[in-house]
Image (cartoon, rainbow, N blue to C red; front, side):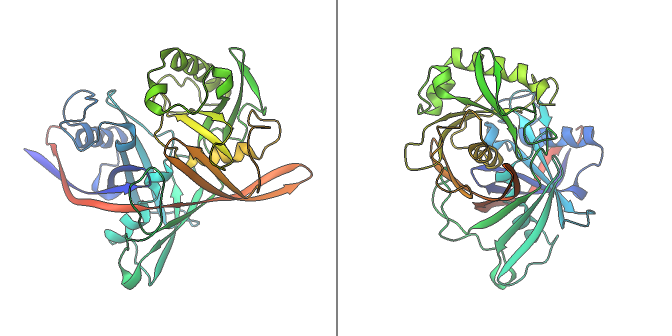
Length: 359
């Protein structure tokens, strides 16, 4: 009375999710989404606890990657990211996820989609949701994926083998341009903001303009209803001007609250994704924030501690995230060729997930 579907469960960066081969799922989007919701949440209608499924009950653990060989001549693998919207019984495909992307090449090797080399394997991943390519290099000594190593990702316990991710062509990937409103600063509800999209649409706001320090822990910010109402008002108004349309039911733009760094980094952040404060910061959210740091006239101007335009440390509630930007500056204009990050991933389980045959 149930259908078995092959899957693997990976931790990618500070997130985790289910990974599927596209050929194991229906091509029809509506049918596919019903199966994904059944796998993640179960047969209940939008169960935020996800008791009847494999989801973890938070946005960071309710993620899915669908992977196949790419028909794009510039890529080896296509990666479609699905975000299960907690408690809504819905799936969002408007954004991508850099953390889950860290598991894509290991998954492709583990399932035999691509052949591993010795001692490393590289592949170009086409990020289907937003466009753009990410060059990913993983360790594969003896043709097998190595997960053990000394790389540390803040927000993730322990260490693991480093995964090198170089993002290409992400500027304006969702909104159409790096500065979606055409301005380095806008004003909404009397508050100055900067809207940016270098892989993740983001609204950046100074903590001091929100009557907070910006150093509060996520639980404290999540409990601040006045703050969250203020952030949502800004988000809903600016969404249309960022070419995102009505964002009431969307997971973008994210909100990034900034303040001076505390631990020698470039900037300190607290990120709402978009209604819950992230315990760390998303990969592409960090890339967008880092990019805003080097642009003149943004709300970060005068707050960021810029030592090197190419190496920026984004502080977050559980540590820091280093972004390596390949930047060309001509006549005051900045072009970002690529953004490099180090992530880790680990295969947690693999087998078959069962969904009711009625689905």
